[in-house]
Image (cartoon, rainbow, N blue to C red; front, top):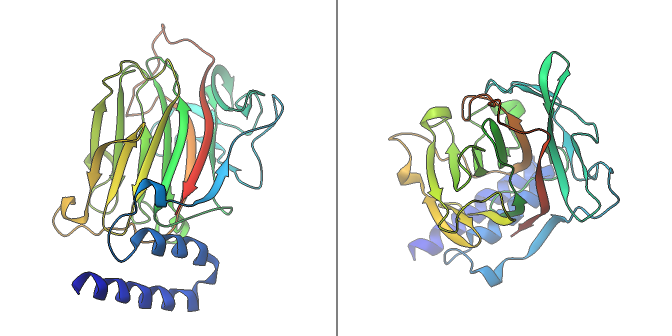
Length: 283
């Protein structure tokens, strides 16, 4: 009875959302599906609602109907690269992959270039399963990530908008992946986070599927369909809000340097690419 009452309350609240925010109905509708009235869906119950398989000729930029370019540097993390919209840094490879490529070159006052793309203004969803099949690079100072950022960033600011890091990786730790949550009172170095040492060895030698499964009361992180971390509102610092009840955008990037990984070493090879086979979203 309690579970059903909670579900009915959610549906009533979301009905109110529709009256003032019709542009995010798709995202909230997806969240209704992931909330359910009886707990999390099984793997077979997910319905594919958005995807990019990165099919196309080599050198073609990613689909502008799905992805926007974030141009610039630092992003508040002390990163050393300048993120561009050039095919030298972000393009299809002609073999069904997106290649985000970091290069050592002087550009706009920075010593490196790379790229960061997002679905801002194109797609956002609350809840569901977000997954990407990725091959990560290798080397000190390389920081690839597959993550979600609240679509209300412009009005709420960070970290109040919420951030879900489905996959973060240090190039100098090729057998380890990180999953994290950032919100008010648990952001940056105080994020709710978990590192996972992959028992199969290095992650850079092949593609792996990184995913989060997200409901109103739990977010779980998976590597090749094995859950390695889950977080619930009770896992947050006392009094901290659970800011994961609204649509988020998807971001893919390959940073160079920054506080999480440090600067590249003389042994770090360039150019290096983050290869993405696909990104898929389910509800």
